[in-house]
Length: 202
Image (cartoon, rainbow, N blue to C red):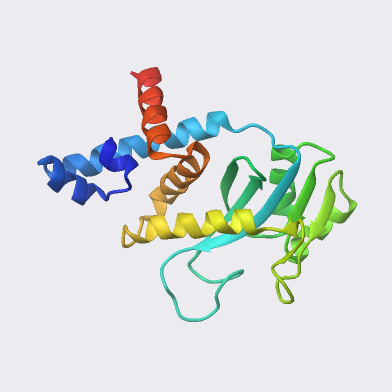
């Protein structure tokens, strides 16, 4: 558990703990399953100032990058400033996909910050107060920015890169692990929460 919290790969943890790597791989997989389930049950609507953004995960590929890139996994994220993040895998970044998630996860009258992607135009005539930042011109204008959620994307991608490829069918487990790491804070808090999750289950 300590090696997992420290961000070690299963193979590294197996070598340090003196166990077979398949045992370690199975153990880490089970931990991610329990963490993902717990993150879903903890998810409550956000209120206040919320940053919204999508990101694309996957191996390095030639051709188009970002929105519409082939072979990538699209993820939508919401981050409450000074608070927690929520992530969800999406099929596409169109308004009809994003707006139901936004309405489910954010309380009316909240302030939402986005970039200028056209799917967010629906927010201009919604129950939310909407600000957008044009990244082609600048990344922040006083309180108008989405630096918090972009910082989370950077952390998540940096953590996932060490695994040299994640099976598509298990990607959500790794995504929710990154969400959990961001939301819980310090390694000590992560370990204490992991123990709490396992005690509730067993």
